[in-house]
Length: 113
Image (cartoon, rainbow, N blue to C red):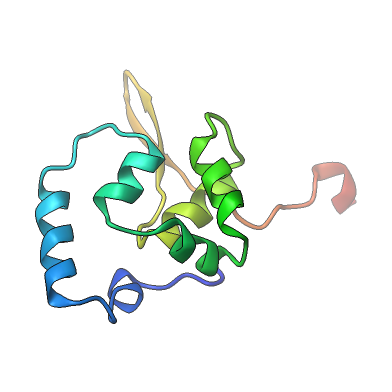
């Protein structure tokens, strides 16, 4: 993952107060929330995300409000919040982690020949 930074690296300049506030808030995270809610709980400003993604803040606002987006954009957004995106498919037989979504595109079968 290009540009991927660990949560510790992303938060190294945070004050102790901010670290404690985020820790307390993440302890009460619900299993489901919108990306905007997640950003607020993690106390990450839209401008911080914009800087990480190398876009302008209004683009981040639009991205956070979308109900549908490319997996690659979602992955970059989650990484800008200090997380890592995992996608799992649930089947009666069990869960499967999908590993090739939102990464460097592979050539189609026809293009490889």
